[in-house]
Length: 219
Ligand code: DX5
Ligand code: ZN
Image 1: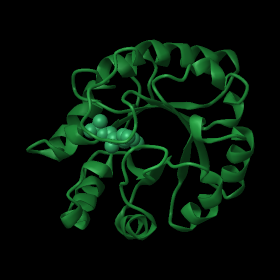
Image 2: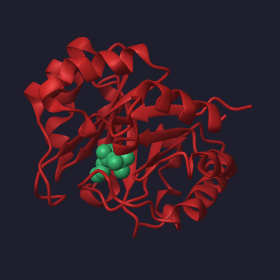
Image 3: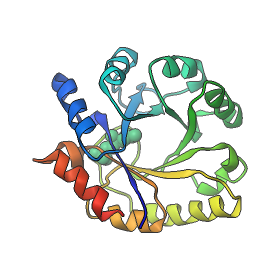
Image 4: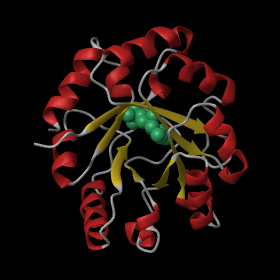
């Protein structure tokens, strides 16, 4: 039985009741907080920035998993460390010198993640896999919550798992976008270690029970 980690995405929280929603995650069986930072350039949306992240990390009592959907993320690596990020994920498509970015994140004492868009083949990570703590496979096009899951993701998870095993890496596989009780089990069985869920959790009548259910079915 595996311990698949559940990471509710704060993007789908009620921003006028953010502290209440953070305390809900603290109380729940969720493992991580997933925080989406969008710049309106890399993705066609702007979420929230540094002051809000700082306010979240003051109350959040679990691992802070920050997903940067921004161009040129190197500029802000030390800032995100100061704001409380434990894991900092940059996009493969946004990094000209990905290897250098990964080293810079680790030098700050954070775990280094790489997110890949639906069109990006996992084989492109073959040469950096031993330097990556987490690969975030986007199962929707990044920028918005509430989109439908792209079925091709299962194949990507299996291919990535194979690359990780072949290279003897310890990389975690995270899935981000459209995760529900309909695909959680199949994703975990394919090799996913972390499931991000936004609208499915926060749109539920009982988010705590929904998180517990995701945790249970993805064992
Ligand atoms: C999308 C974000 C996701 C999003 C997931 O760009 O990276 O983390 O919040 O939301 P749902 O679970 O609603 O697809
Ligand atoms: Zn995300």
